[in-house]
Amino acid sequence: MPLFLVALLFLTAHQAQAVELSGRYTNLLFQHKDSRNQYVTSDLNRLRLTVDGGEHAWQWRLSYDHELLYGGAVRDPAFAQLRQRPDPTWLDLNANIVHSASIDWRHNLYRGWIQYKAEAWDVVLGRQRIAWGSGRIWNPTDRFNPVQPTALEPDQKLGVDAAYMTHSYSDFGSIQLVAAPPQSNRALNRKWALRWQDTIEQTDMALWLGEVGEERVLAVDVTGNVADAAARLEWQQSWGGKQGGFGQLVVGIDGTLTGQLFTEGLYVAVEYFYNGLAGLHAKQLIQSDILQSNSRQLLGMLMAYDLTPLWRTELVWLLDLEKPSMFIAPSLRWSVSDNMDATIFSQLPTGSAGSEFSGLNELFAVKLEYYF
Image (cartoon, rainbow, N blue to C red; front, side, top):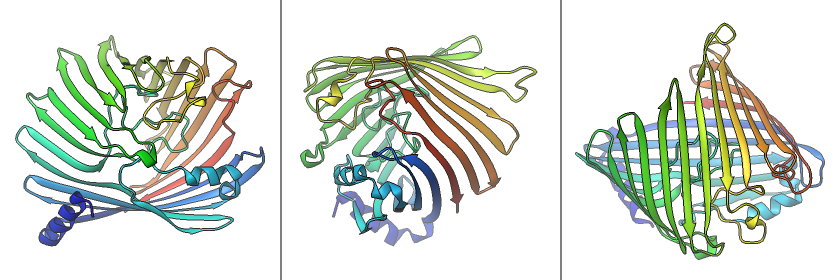
């Protein structure tokens, strides 16, 4: 049994009075085109139970998922290939309970970490989310948990099994060290990174260097104010590795527009993404720790507006700057109550063969989330 799980069980036994239980149920009903270009309907049910505990300098968390997928997605021939692809984690903490022609029921440890925090030191060991990068659509400097903006649920980030140590030398400045072990049978690279971040006047800056497998990586993340907006720059350069040297860059600006038409304020973010690795993933093993694209140059826009305190609309718009291709994802969310949200959304990709979004299919969905 992994050492951090032993420690968590020990803390649970001795600190029962400090334990808090919470949960989240998600139902996602969606209609989409499968790999045979046929419209099918699927229903995803996820129950996530989270136990938090701790005392004094020690804290810990366990988040455990049961996920049941029913319908056409399971019958899609492409789903069988997806099931055979292992999760990009060091520990094998997921398994199928039931799999049939129309049902796939699995369970998984979503988060499982123990933390020691005292004075200027913070150490986290276990399955955790390492969120690096300030971009609103793409985060090339995140080599631990990058998520494509076209994902069905971009907020669901599996996490990484790693040791994460932070030393804070001021209110805003810190030095961070992360190390994650490799797992060859899961195509998981050994990773380590040393990162510095601080705020200089009104500019947030971060710089890290490290290794991802055979790659040597240098990354920069800068965010500063431009009038009433925020300007963002993310850049990572890699040397070595199977794909050779490559760079990825994001430049963006975001802010809130107000006026007679947008009395509550319209949030707008615009980003340009350059990917020096574009197209190479089709010829090599796909890595889960690199943002991938067919085209080198993409443009993205994110807009959000609160229609009322209970209703919020959002739009993600992505454009391939090299070949005719576009991705549009509008959504409308309703806060049904303090602990329930309902969202209706769609994904509408278009494009010529070989373009960025030509391999994606239309999708229409309704999502219900209940927190307890």
